Every structure is written in structure tokens, then in C-alpha cells.
Amino acid sequence: MNKKLRKAVIAGNWKMNKTPEEAKELVRAIVPAAKDADCDVVVCVPYVDLFPVLEAAKGSKLGIGAQNCHWAPSGAFTGEVSAPMLSSMGVQYVIIGHSERRTYFGETDKTVNQRIRAALDNGLSVILCVGESLEQREQGVTAELVAMQTKIALGGVSGEELKRIIIAYEPIWAIGTGKTATAEQANEVCASIRSTVSSLYGSAAADALTIQYGGSMNAKNADELLSQPDVDGGLIGGASLKPDAFAQIIKAANR
Ligand code: PGA
Image 1 (cartoon, rainbow, N blue to C red):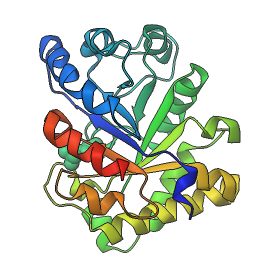
Image 2 (cartoon, rainbow, N blue to C red):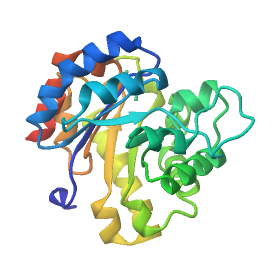
Image 3 (cartoon, helix red, strand yellow):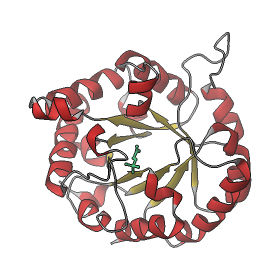
């Protein structure tokens, strides 16, 4: 695999953290690290923080993302936010199919696919999350499960549109638990995702696809995880709320 073909992307997933005031402060602390980065740096923030964060990051290299979007452009969907709403604000990225959405909010492979369609139709780049539970890993179905999630999510996505997709491999058992996948485990599944994408779009498209690892990535383990041949970056939860740790992860991706 040729890592030089693709740019590393380090993305912070703030989850349900930070008030608008706190968000501005955190983003100001992250902007300098993004400035010196060789990789792309993104923060995916709660909806109410998007405006202040876009303002605070103006003129910087930091990409701004949301953590979900609905599949319809507008309508009677109380509590939801649409892709045109996000893109009209200047948001560039959106996380789709995070395991917390799948586990706590009934997100299915089908709705993940529908939300991706809406995001792409509105010019957004997508961070698509896939990954297995501990039980599924122990049952030995990780590769098949992740292939299925990937295939269903990418249904109807063209080769041209694939250029706006990042896939984040996030083993559910490693998220927020302090238990990181080993570098070998992370690389093995990222490579299997790349081969699934290759079977769908061909090897050139698969070689150009950014595949992140996510799940308790931190300043200490980032170096080893990010040096794996098929790991092209990280989706970082807890450590993305700490500017120093996040800056160190960005540095690890630069090497
Ligand atoms: P974590 O979260 O880094 O806190 O494990 C990762 C994620 O859920 O995206």
C-alpha cells in the first residue's frame, strides 16, 4: 500500500461537550497546531458550537464538522439538523454512523446510507464510522461485519463522490474505554476496509482513500497507530478536548 497517495486526517470528535463559549476557547488553542500540520486537521463539534467555532477558526487551516445530519433537506423531523443547514453555514465535514448514534439512537446501516447521500448532495465531506463490538470480535466476524457496514453505507456513492469520504474504523470496545486496539489490530481492519473498497471502486480509488483509526487514541499511542501502513489518521474523542494531547497526535501524523 502506498501511504504517500493519501493525506492523513486527524479529526476531533467533541461529542456532547463544550458550551459555545468553551468551544471558542478550545478552538483557539487548537488553531496553532493545525497551522503547522502536514495533515488535515478537523474538529467535529456539537451543532450549537458550529457558529462560534467557525468564527474562531476563520482564516485558519482547521476544518469544521458536525456530528450527524438528517437525510431530508427539511421537514417535520423535530430535533434534527439537515445537510443544507450545515453546508450553508460553511461546515465542511460531517460524521455519519458513529457507534454512539447506532447504539443509543437507533441508527441503522440504511439510515447511515441515506444520511451520507444527503451530505454528499450538499457538498459536505463525510467521516463514515464503522466498527465491531467486543462480542462480534470474539465471534470472529469483524472483517465481515465491517465489510457489510461499509458496503451498505456506500451504496449509490459514485467513484467521484468517494473522494469526499473518509472511513473511520472504530472498534466499539475501544471507544472511551482507555482500551486501544493494538496497532496490528487497527491496521488489519483498516486494510480489510481498503480491500472492500477496492472490490467496489478499484485499487486506485482504494489506495487514495483515507482510513482513520478511532478508539482511545491519545498522545502516547498515536505514534505507533499512525505509523501503520493502512492507518491514515485518527478520529479522536477524549484526547481532542485536551489541546496539548491533540497537538501531539497531530505531530505524530506529520511524521
Ligand atoms: P475516544 O472516542 O477517543 O474517546 O475513544 C473516539 C470516538 O468515539 O470517535
